[in-house]
Length: 63
Image 1 (cartoon, one colour):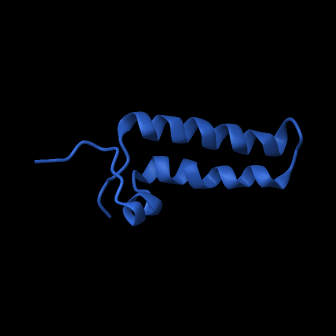
Image 2 (tube, rainbow, N blue to C red):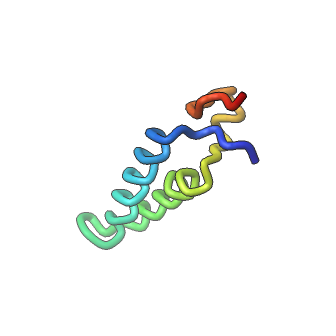
């Protein structure tokens, strides 16, 4: 899998993922917070399948 998620994008995804997961334990305590695993996983791996589908790339092109 080629990396298609840039550094800033990865950081934002990790923050959003952690905030959503925190909703499971703090706040409304809804199980919907587990959806935060998706952006957290894409931040760790550096690959987003939706970006590939739409032809988006936030990572600088390697030469």
